[in-house]
Amino acid sequence: MGELHYLIWAGLAAAMVGLSKGGLPTVGMLSVPILSLFMSPVKAVVMLLPIYIISDMVGLWLYRKNFSIINLKILVPAGVGGVLVGWLTASVVSDTVVKMMIGLMGVGFVLNAWRKRNTLQSPHPASWKKGIFWGSLSGFTSFISHAGGPPFQVYLLPQKLPKLVFAGTSTLFFAVINLAKLGPYHQLQPYGSAELAGALVLIPFALAGTVAGAYLTRKIADDWFFKWVQWGLLAISIKLIVDVLRA
Image (cartoon, rainbow, N blue to C red; front, side, top):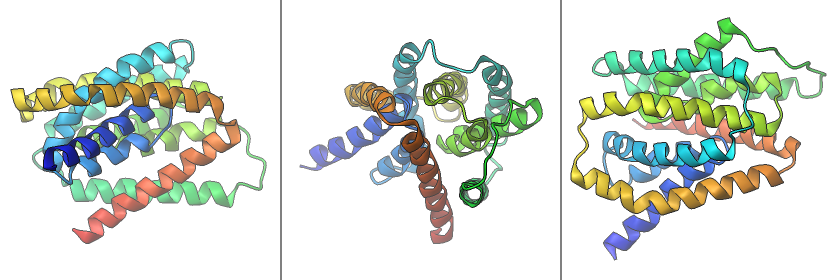
């Protein structure tokens, strides 16, 4: 029963990863907390990376025609740089500080967006200055705990892109970021047969989640899609803050 209990929850964590790669933002950030019920958070982060990468491959095919090339040109180099900074500072940077910082920024962004919701806001253009900052922060926090979603969304949401372009840009960006994390993760905590076997078992859950996420993204109305993104961003940001306060 213990193994079945673990498989159910681990399968749910993998499905959450898949749903996020299929186009439902922020959902994947629940995966590490779920797996942390059964193992150390560090081990959970490392174990989930192969799941992220495999889900990325499916997501890349699903959104191969839907993405913002100008934003990817800005975000990808910045995000890879953020991963590098995360690797070089892994032994000295406090997870607690990073979680609180990202949590506060996410809550602040959503509350500000709600404050302006009744005023007409024109879409913001892609910005090298903002993109380099938020893209680097997204790569850094993604390296720390697969929590790169909030900074990415803070940058991209004001552009009011079509939902499939938003989802596709997110999928392509994090596909590159996750590949960039593979070497550093293995160097910090080498993959063993147990971790790889555990990840292998979870692949079907992740693939099913990816396909389901893409289907739901196309079916949900644009207005509700972005409300989902905002509520998800707020929930995850509050959770990060609560985690810090409990610690």
